View 1: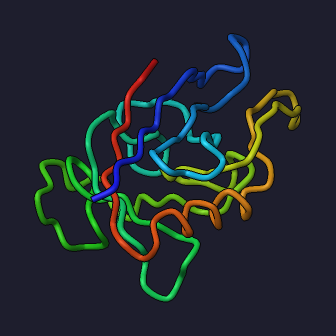
View 2: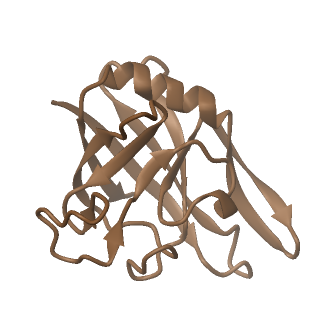
View 3: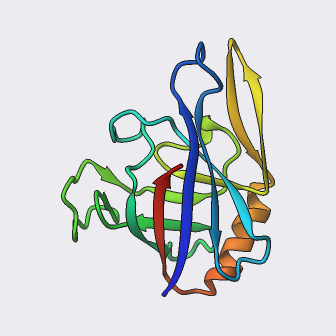
Length: 154
């Protein structure tokens, strides 16, 4: 099984302290571009639909009938309502999918070819760009097979 590494660099849930969101980089041996940028919700104690998922080792599976969506499974994250190997069933359907802004994700991971910050209302938020291109790159690299995903903080 191929292995991907997601290293988170920064997380903020208070716009007074910096841009909102959690940013990082994703890489794996043989990934054509080398590094892809990631965007997640800020860490909020593993709360469903409000927090990025905990650090750990997961399996990344292809979602049937959607070649640009990958489901994160294992540890504290479950596939749909099937709680195999799950110790905390509060989290389910955590995906890596096409998205550019925090409002596009609910506990999932957005991929992009690049990243920046933008002002939305009174808040500055992280965002990623060319998400569909990044997801196509990941889909090509995975070649229809699951991959191991190791998530950690820098």
